[in-house]
Amino acid sequence: MRHVQHILVVEAVDTTHNGAAEATIGTVAHQLGLDHSGASRMVRDAVATGYLIRVASERDRRRVCLQLTPNGHDLLTGSRRWQRRVFDELTITWDQQDRQQFASYLQRLVDELGV
Image (tube, rainbow, N blue to C red; front, side, top):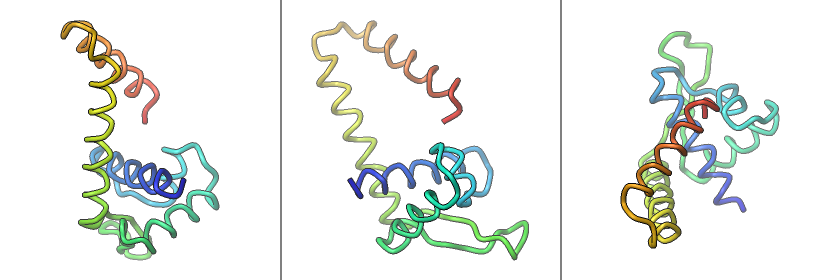
């Protein structure tokens, strides 16, 4: 279960960075729908495991931000590879157009949910 939590936290940090914002415990909490203390525990564990590091904000040195480590990037890459493999296995009997349409609907859902 802890591995899943690490993936969730790393994904939240990466998504925040892709939006050009700084990732913080607050942004992780928002992305995952958690309270601050729950997100803080998950972040602390991901830092201790070596998937994230804490750094000073470039905008406000008093603020602490989160960044992925090389191990965090590897975890994210592996997770996305697994997701792709499972998608391919679950839709193996579908024609390519149906698979692409379903994938676009999933992406639309993610975009609309803001996750």
